[in-house]
Length: 480
Image 1 (tube, rainbow, N blue to C red):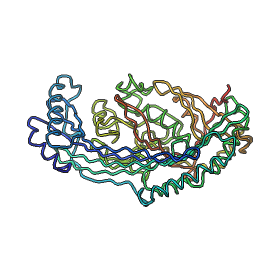
Image 2 (tube, rainbow, N blue to C red):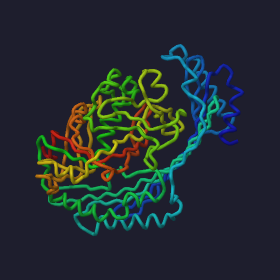
Image 3 (spheres, helix red, strand yellow):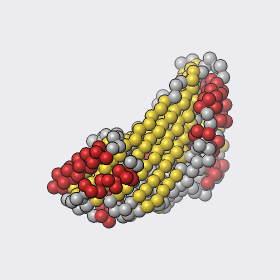
Image 4 (cartoon, one colour):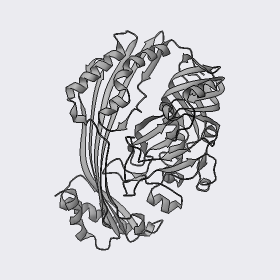
């Protein structure tokens, strides 16, 4: 029986149930890697299972199984139903069928060159070539690696109110890194850390410049090896998109998750400095700050048409001209909190329930060119590529480090500096945003492993951002 037939078969056991849903997820993950001239064996993962969610008697519960037989699904359904009735007396909000309107639709990642259009030999040959360019036979190179990761997900959702959803996701993640060492100094340079990941096919390698990056990364690693330490003090800070994505992720994305604001995550991932009464009145950043939630952004890592509770996805502003206007909460969190939210109930697997997650959280482009931002700085530092992060449990105080920095002096990009770091407080940092880069400075990136939830769910999150300029930021070197 196919998944829809298995769902239809469950209807005969749904007496007394207000609503139930079957969500199927099939996952395939393949990773290829060459390290220090050695071709490593492919890493493969494939699984398939379903989760059944039941709302009954004002209670809700779920059960999951990878045994896709009618008897096994009935057992999972009966377990979820029994637990839902048992949990009814503990319900913290009344169930309403209006939470889950009936929807039908499909979504497919935009793929031009399918993963299988290149043989595994061709892919490994590319990785071998790029890895050798990273190392160049230089004795100062102590580690070098080139890898390709491919993920395929097939998600199907059927519900008792008539919802039918099919979504297919293709994700490509290329990665390069080189580590160099000389005279007691060690430096690493990477291909945007692990952020150069998007939905699509092998055309992602072209759009990210993967094949051309090795020579640049090798040269920048050697520059860092002999560069001076980053200067310290209060100064201007210009952040490249591959660092902006981490800044967005940690000090905007996570604090705005409504389940975190409600306290659901306090035991594991912490709480938030954002309180419910801040929405609609709190000045999160300067008037240059416009932050959108946009699962409709084609090719970005966390694009989709529906979230995993069947809510249709659409672009919405979280912060508009610096003002906090909406949170990151799906249908259930919106009902619990009374706060405005979005379609972001997401799950990483068939055996995990959907929870409030970031999807594509983007900073809208501004009007400044890179040249204009640099020329406006009397003294400061330009930073690229995150390499370390630390932020408190309420996602307020933070300290981030980058791989590469360059001093900006009298409006000119000058010498490369190593170990560039900066720290700040979210509630103040974004108010010191003084310029936002235009469309030409934007890059589309993401993170493949944002962790949250108990049990943990490491999910994909997209971020598109221009370069951004901040004033009066505490910058310091690695030995400060």
